[in-house]
Image 1 (cartoon, rainbow, N blue to C red):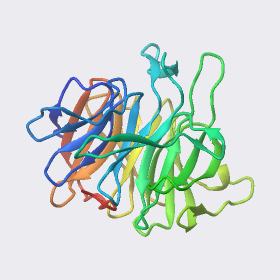
Image 2 (image 1 turned 180 degrees about the vertical axis):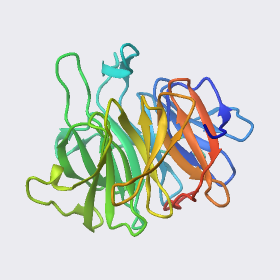
Image 3 (image 1 turned 30 degrees about the vertical axis):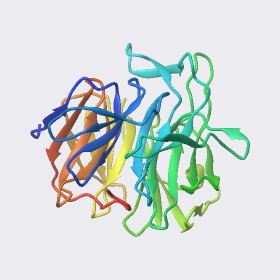
Length: 305
């Protein structure tokens, strides 16, 4: 197992790490119900007042933080870590905007065309300044909400549904040329790809194309996909639950490598450092943030702070 340095502990199911140019990492704490900044010394400072269940985080063109908030959930740890339903104060999911300087927190979107967002999960900005985000859906005792893929603008003026319904869309990322949007599905352990026609519009292939896109790769056995990041080469790095690794998949669907981590619930990965060859990984079962050297540089995100 490659060496991994633990940067912070006692985090409440961390997710959505974002590397900042000052060396700190900003992430969501789902069970902690907050967005947290972790500087190199490992201390922790809350940013804004997210509440609910902050998951994916991204910096936008205005320097603000955009947060996928699943609204809060109750989890079981046996026989496996699963959301069993909404938290006691759940009112729905949302996309939030947090000013990192003042902490001002407001809801940008809580529905799309009258359909309430259930559990927004992950987010990525394109070079035009809009963002793609997934909604995982919500698991209840005897039923579940569907998930989907959406596109929105950061000024609160537009949100559109691109793919709906999906089973459990989780991680989302863009190819280096921004002609493809990738979506990792948790329960099927599959990576899907959709061709982008223009920002916020994708090509829908006819049946039997899965969800109108392409199945890039699927893994055997009981493994579950979480969030993802893209390498500069175009490979897709998918946090893989249960197996406790990051699965690196080529755009053609080949498993390039699997990098083991000391946690069965690595939920997300982002790249940072001056050459983007440091991988920051949220180790959520143990509530830790880790960092390790990565074989290839990550793709520089749009509006990286």
